Length: 420
Image 1 (tube, rainbow, N blue to C red):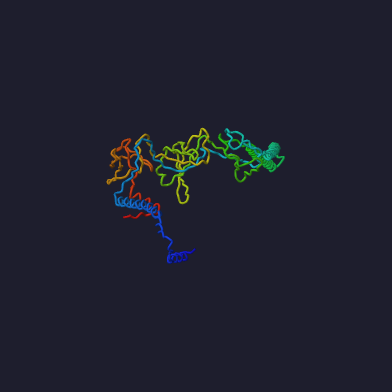
Image 2 (image 1 turned 45 degrees about the horizontal axis):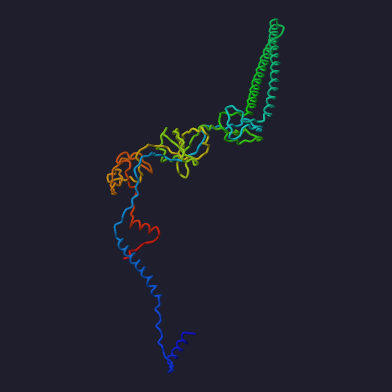
């Protein structure tokens, strides 16, 4: 039933006369709704909370900000001032053992990683072609030596003919021209002997050269070390007429050389003999030490950055250092052990340009104190005088109320306006 119909029905009932025998009893008053009371109890705490927050904001707004200080205790430690660089490892000495004659690589007696001694046989080239040349050289030499015997016999005959013709000329049996011809024939025979002797010397040199080439078919290790590369393979044909083919590379890995790239801004800080060390990517906590022995005068330029190579050597008795490893290199300009150390951020200059630090006293107050600074790097600084072990210095200070709140609100993108 709709509300309008219900209203009409109630009005009609009210106008309708009441029978005489019917007693009208007044209706009871409707109960008070408790819903309004429950809403009131919820609203009161909310209003009180808002009023409390407003009062707190009003009491804090405009108050003096407090300062939160980051401090650190002065302690003893070690400190270094370094020139840093990146570098690579290389063998202190390495050599390519190559082929000096052409031919097929018949056998290779070593593999990568093998250790060899000096003059150890490492490879052989097929010697058949050179052996054939030697056979031909020997046959040619034998032929020339036989020719020499013949020419010398002719020379002896020509000499005898001169003596005969000279006697005949003395008895007027022959003319002088016959004697002159005999002398000329003798000179020609002597020249033939000398020519054959020269050819024999040349052939002997050719034979000796071919024998040397035959020796080159066996490749021996020029030094003791480790085989680090073998670009040539068994069965490969080597052509030594244009370039010397490399068969194996031998390196002495007992001592490694570090080639560090130092920028032109830092190379002036280096000096010969200064201490240096490096760490590896896989062993960041282990130091390998040496002394700077060379700065190469010719730099490399990468992306318009001029870099010089600084070299120092480190022993490698265990063989853990390998070629082409990357190294983080440190050249030690100055170092001190067991000295008072504070963070570099704690040091600032006073009005006269001298170093000072802010010290927290036992009562909690702060005071500025002049100090003498020794070795200093980007992280820490040595304090020579002005502080004692156990003093607490201020590294950084920041506002703990208004300033910190403002920074926090800016970081969250919120600006808190005053509530009152």
